[in-house]
Structures are given as structure tokens and as C-alpha cells.
Image (cartoon, rainbow, N blue to C red; front, top):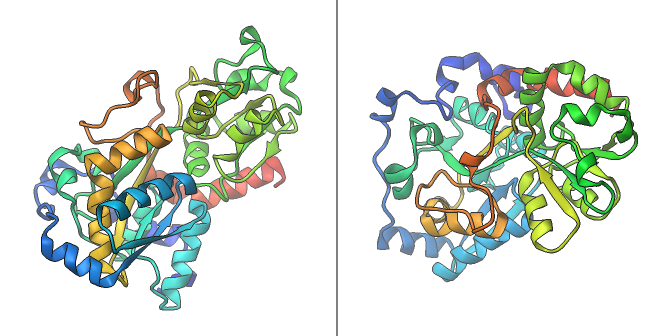
Length: 355
């Protein structure tokens, strides 16, 4: 099957292979490749290549901060970042592979279901950073050593405190269906954002599609990325967000903007973002070195400190004043189910919202 014809339905046909994603049994983990240790030889080979190309779904300032840390630790190796939404990134990689264009070394997505497809098609290279082998729990590392969870966060509700009084603030998703929110809400789109694809699946599963049908009657502003709703409420363009990532709201609040986060009483959709080395990476040594840095305590702490996200690395802790993931009620993630239903989710969503 050529990459440009690849559909999410096709890749799920190998369900037994794909089902290992972030839910690998212990007996499979015991057969996983051994930890890959950073050696002087690897560093030398990476410096000879001179660069690494990272397809990243995370915010550009966040990926740039990680890249700066890597470049400072390993002078002579530059990081080129290609940033776009996960859903578009999924199509781009398929088109490139179908055309036998191999430009990407390592890849990150906010839709963990993409790794079902990439694993099924044999596009990922086995590489297990030492910290992943030592510290990451089984549900956050692939049993075949192909990827691991590079960051974790949730989708939340939030509001502009200059436009909404605390007593009028929503406590969860269902509160947003009140008529008072007519033309006052903003939300992102699952056809662009992997985060929103994942959260749409979880909300529809737990609350029903009629929740979205009722929400659509309130003339909700539609934007692309999960970054956009926090930005819109921070600017006062909308009073509240119906979805969007929680970490940008936290960062806006820390910077003094009038926003407040609400972790929905129904549970916040859980977003797990893996990272992997591609089998056809043009700079394979630099790719492996970067993967080790990203999953080290240093790399993971950078993500948490700079971007207010969470890590599966037990030695990484949130900044004081920020919530720990264990303090947040979350919905259950299911990337294999998202993979199998993605086409239907997009179509149904577009029909409901008319966009």
C-alpha cells in the first residue's frame, strides 16, 4: 500500500499488531529491546551528521525551547523544527513516504492514534532511551521499543475573568449548554488538531454526540489548534472555551492575563503525545541522540517547567502552584479506538458544526 493512499481505517486492519500502543502487556515489555545508552561514538556520529529534523505537533516556542537545550548540550548539531497540527502532519508524512521522500528524523504527535498507523506500516525505528527503560511505566512506552510518551496534558474548560464572574463560571462541559453562552464560546477542530481529535472521541464516548449537537446551536467560534481557544479567551475575543489545552491557560494566567482554568467535573480528556525515531531517518544518529535527550530528566523537566505539561518520568515534578496530573480527574484515553473512528469523528463533527 502506498503512503498517499493510506487511510486510518486501513492501518487498523492489523489490530493485533497495533493494540500494543501505550497498553502493552508485561510479557511483551519483557521482550522489548534493551536500553540504548548514549555513547561517545553516538555523539560523534551525530555531530558528523550535523542536524536533526523534528516534525513536532507541540507549540513552536515549546519545541524551540527543547531544541535549544539539546543544541547547548551537543554543540555542532542543529535542530530543524517543522511544526503543524497532528492531523495535517499525519497526511504529510503519508504523502512523503508514498513519494519516497524521507526528510523527517523524529516525529511527535498530539494524537497518539497516529502511532498505531506508523507502527503498523513499519515506519518507526526501535530505540529505547535509557531513561525510558529505567523509569517509564509500561503504559507510557511501546512494547517493541518504537516510541514513548514524550508529554502528557489534558483538555479543559476555561473562562475570561473580566467577562465572567466566578459564580457564573461553568463547572464542566454540560454547563456550557446553557443559553447564556450563546455566541460567547470558542473551540478547536478535530480535523486540524490531534489534541481535539482525541478529546472529541473521549467526550462523545462519555457524554454522547448529542452534547455536541446542543453545543453547536450556541454559535460557537471554531478555530484550528488546541492552542487557539486559550489565546482567544486571554484576548477577550470570547468569554469561555469549550475545549483547548490546559497548559496554555496556565501559562496565560501566570503571565497575568485574566483567565481561569476549570477541570470539568465530568473528567478532562487525557492527551498523551508520543515521540519516535523514523526508520528512514536521514540523520539516524542525531535522531537517536535527540530522542535520548528528550526523554532524559533534563529534557522532560524542560517541557514541564517551560510548557506546564506533565511527564511520565517519575523524577520530573511540576512547578509549585501547578496541579499534578494525579490531582486532575481525567477521562480514559484509547488511541486504538480513536484510530478506528477518526474518519467518522471528523465527518460527524463537520456535519454538526457545519465547518
